[in-house]
Amino acid sequence: MNIAQPSGVDARTPSASRPTASERLRDFGTPEITPHVAVADRQRRKGEDTELLRELDGVIAAPEEQKSVTLAANDRAPGTARSFTRDVLTAWGAEDLVERSVLIVSELTTNAERHGRSAREAVSLPGAGGTRNITLTLALRADAVSIEVEDSSPKLPIPAVSFNPYSTSGRGLCLVSYAADVWVALPKEDGSGKRVLALVQRL
Image (cartoon, rainbow, N blue to C red; front, side):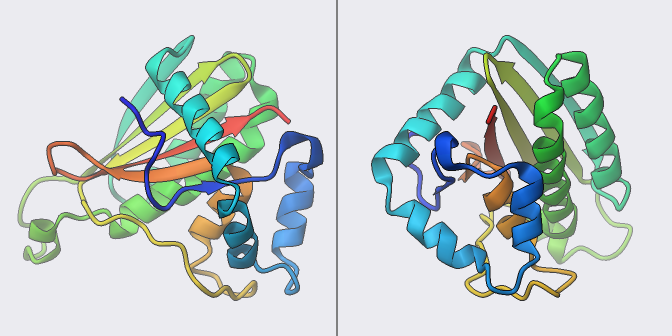
């Protein structure tokens, strides 16, 4: 699989100048910090973005560790996904990647639970059809973890063009952008849904 040239890529700043996860989250809550502006600035560094995507591709293609879980797409999914991520990364000795990874997993599974329906499911009557599922896959190689969330909607997520730091919704992809080194959304090859992938590197 080659994901080196997708559209909608978002990459973060070089590791030498990156703040800690706590500093990023603190800044995220500051009205003067507008994630969509920072994202636009990051997207201009195409060479750096490509290298990060190659790293993500490499972790997925040849992981040292890999584990998946399939969850029913209900309001318990994000909490279960967070616990799974925390337990797996701790077992792999990647405790320093837990904070950022849990945040990303929480936001991506919440989006999948809320918006990850296929067109057929979206128009179905309540109780019709089977249970929707979300699949979360974690992979580890060297100093990086890849996160992959699959759902049954082929509609790709679009980051908000404006941001209200006091809003209780609509912040998910902005948070993902700040916590991940790079993230990308791709339609599944068989058209049955999409995959959202993120890379978390050691600082």
